[in-house]
Amino acid sequence: MTTLTMAISRHLGAFLALALVLALPALSPARAEVEIQDVVSPGGIRAWLVEDYTVPIVAIRFAFRGGSTQDPAGKEGLANLMTGLFDEGAGDLDSDAFQLTLDDAGAEMSFSAGSDAVYGSMRMLAEGQDEAFGLLRLAIQSPRFDAAPMNRIRDQIVAGIQAAALDPSTKGEVAWREALYGDHPYARPDEGTAETLATITAEDIRRYHARVFARANLVVGVVGAIDAETLKRRLDELFGDLPAEPQLTPVQRAEPKFGQEISVTSDLPQTTLQLAWPGIERKDPQFFAAYLMNHILGGGTFSSRLFEEVREKRGLTYGISSALVNRDFSSALAIGTSTRADRAAETLALIRSEVAKMAKEGPSEAELAFAKKYVIGAYAINNLDTSGAIARTLVELQLDDLGIDYIDRRGELINAVTLEEVKAAAHRLLAAEPAVMVLGPAISQGTVQ
Picture 1 (cartoon, rainbow, N blue to C red):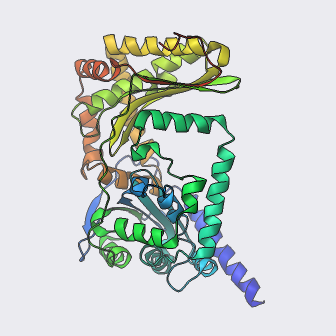
Picture 2 (picture 1 turned 90 degrees about the vertical axis):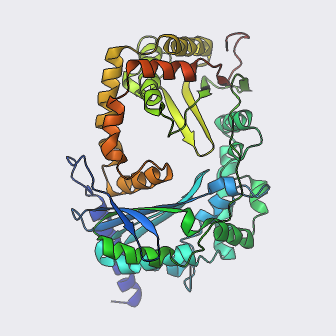
Picture 3 (picture 1 turned 45 degrees about the vertical axis):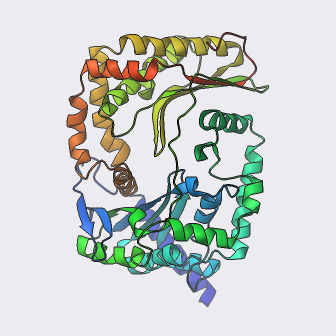
């Protein structure tokens, strides 16, 4: 057997082994509770850990607060471009060598940038964790940001931006962000533009990395076949040499501009409708009252009022939903749907009517009881069904500062919400005039109201 054949065989074997293991459920489907350990390394790095040996894998997810809001003006897309380069070479390994070594280790690694944080994750076979964690350490601490892969990834992003620009929905998204957020960083596209990406240099990326990747800026969640003592050592290996404190640019709170109409005219057979009302902070005492109200209004999809009135009774759309959108510097309640262009005015009027009814009357006792039962029961299915999902949940709970016992307390917090509290939350959020965007053929004047 030639050296090349042996290498291919070895890489394929590692890949198939990992794929087979990752196809198995990380935790028993019947297991609705998880035991979270608060692990602190000798170097002071904290992680939340769920030990589980059901399958021999380890999943780690982490986040550095910052994200695309830390992109310098004129260099939008920097954080997103950077996250495409962590597996394109680190330390002494160039792009090809790094990715071949990652295959040999039987691991999957990914990075992404949101508006408020940069995320990283890895899933690996427990028996290959020495090699996998070593590669992750290189990616975090010693990324190369070489010119060739940087230009290639940039070209890919630009190609995606240019292709998306041909889609009228992209024009709508840009208009929606800019109308809601004005000159706030939330109005900027995370991926940047062809013009801003062209200005970004490797030195720009290195400066961003040095400012944002810091120990005090970090949260970590780990799930799988690893014990607390081993994890402590891994945490210091992965993050111990990073700067202690980040150098973040201050970001002001964004106050979305409600009470406005945005019309994006396009010759489409369907009209897209987006509406936004004031939201509620995650740690607000009325949050769960608002959450349950939103579930009844449109968050419950097939069981919601909007789905029943707009989809089931009148067939105006294939789907409609509402959501509480929480970001570090802003919050909103958003509703979105698409409908036939000739019925857009009717659909919009019906949505506004249902929202006004909820704001004035709130839900019924029966609706609230059903919503409580559903949102309590669905949590484990939506957030705790795989090792990756649990690791993601551990990170989000830390970013939101909800406490290590949140999963245990969540059901009690929801059951404690009264009907009067839900009615008060409905009036608080929905009595305001929303921002409304119509994307598609123009509709008659006055129908937006």
